[in-house]
Length: 96
Image (tube, rainbow, N blue to C red):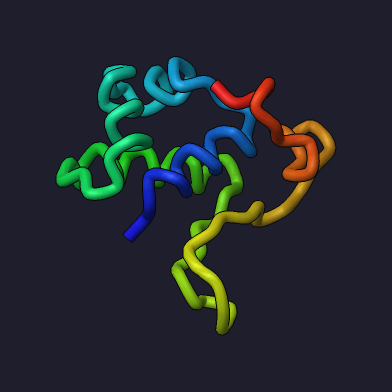
């Protein structure tokens, strides 16, 4: 199961605003915000749509313990200089 923190992190890594993700997924902004806030959301159709878009942008969702240790996470499939914000550059000023 993908967590709300993974969704927020993936969107931030890609440099997408909530509005841009809502537009691309054809979901209301309030639905995106709910998915990013409520880790136990039961809107599986919306979650699937958002996950698909984020994965199409190059994000991989990692299950907890998938590398032998640690919790759930995210990473890029491939990195290009023009694709989003590098993880080391993420901070509160570029998180919407």
